[in-house]
Image (cartoon, rainbow, N blue to C red; front, side):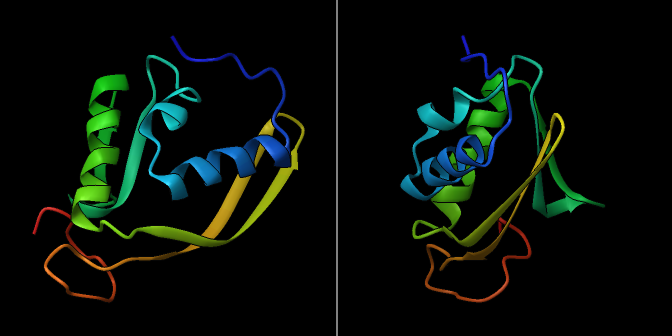
Length: 108
């Protein structure tokens, strides 16, 4: 069962970002609801790949790290307005086959 976060703060967003950089799927999933959605920036769909539901989202996150084992989200900046939080970052990573650069298709 996910933790209930009652207030969005930049500290909460940084904790979430830190979990990504540790590749800590359990910590990341503690932020997710049962009906969560992960829209990956890469994939065959128009807007990347869409993962729906806790177990599917968990598998999607694992796929990111399998594709780019050294995935890192750098220079995180967080903004909060009322009940909305936004994070922006620079993604870096090397595909498992050694290819660097923009990740066009995580399953390729």
